[in-house]
Amino acid sequence: MSLLKIQNLKVHFNARGKIVKANNGIDLEVRENEVMGLIGETGCGKTILGRAIIRLLSDNVEFAGKIIYKGEDLLCLPEDRLRKIRGKDIGIILQNPSAALNPVLSVGDQISEIYRYHGDMKKQEAGIRAAKMLEMVGIDPKRMYEYPHQFSGGMKQRVMIAMGLALNPGLLIADEPTKGLDPATKDKIVYLICELVKKRNTSLLLITHDLGVAEKMCDRIAVMYAGEIIEIATIGNILSHPKHPYTQDLLNSLPKRGLNPTVGESPSLSSPPSGCSFHPRCKCVMDECTKKHPVLVETEKGTNVRCFLYEGN
Ligand SMILES: Nc1ncnc2c1ncn2[C@@H]1O[C@H](COP(=O)(O)OP(=O)(O)OP(=O)(O)O)[C@@H](O)[C@H]1O
Ligand code: NI
Image 1: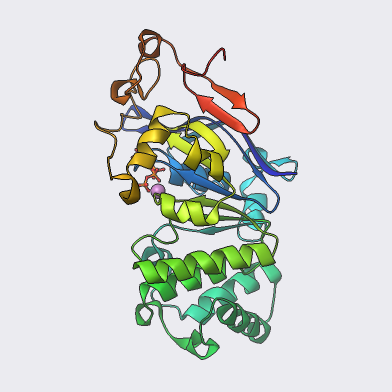
Image 2: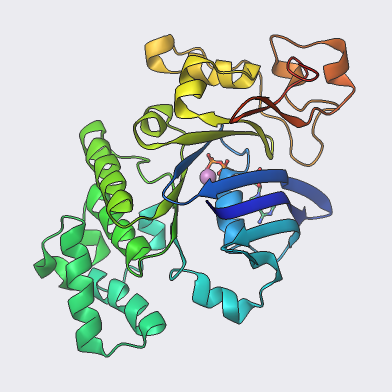
């Protein structure tokens, strides 16, 4: 069953007269109880997509398309309705917990605030709930009176997870939840998120650079390039039969496969190359790739690819 269905989503910024097409025609579905990974190199539009779902973006932005959550188009909702959905139905763990946490509020108060705002709870009751959430993410509830600067990177990330899941959302969006953590802490955080979303029947949209993390956590993967999705498949198929030349390059850039990153620079989102945005860097480039824009086509059940190598097959 589909929980979130994004249809032809366009998120364009007007940045000093230039139109930055950060998301340019995204089609993506997240099913119930599914972990969907979103991968792609820096600047390709992953964070913007995560934030667009709950419209947590700057004012210089224009949207088009649909973001259907449980049958309702979030793009049509007024701000006050959306504010109630944020956190309650859709939780988000923002990139960089140090910036996302309030330095002058204790971690307990930051979690309590969520319950007081959404659940209309009294201070004491909200405090009890906050302590339970801390315990759930493996933090001694006695530490609820401490401030973010007293916590390590991994602990701050645990607090973010507690906040993201506090109201038991149907969907959790986690933006680079393991970034900057050492390998052992990373593994623990990955394990914790996986365990919690399974236990609570929460779907997860996981944004990550790290294919190793995606491999451990995801059921399916959507690969983004220059504001578009260029391949969607199960994690098994992505790892064993990557179809798009860019996905193949991404896999080859894994340390265990020789660490060969894609040559060339990622394209400008305000003036992308003609035809397929990836053609200037593509090892399989053909004549038509420079002229026509490929569409996302199903190559086999459950695998969709945006590449002329597979069109017409
Ligand atoms: N407010 C804004 N105005 C103009 N352009 C923006 C704005 N916010 C983001 N962008 C542009 O949108 C593009 C996508 O950014 P985004 O943060 O989604 O990338 P990302 O894939 O999450 O990268 P990373 O992996 O580094 O986090 C970038 O080129 C960025 O410069
Ligand atoms: Ni990002």
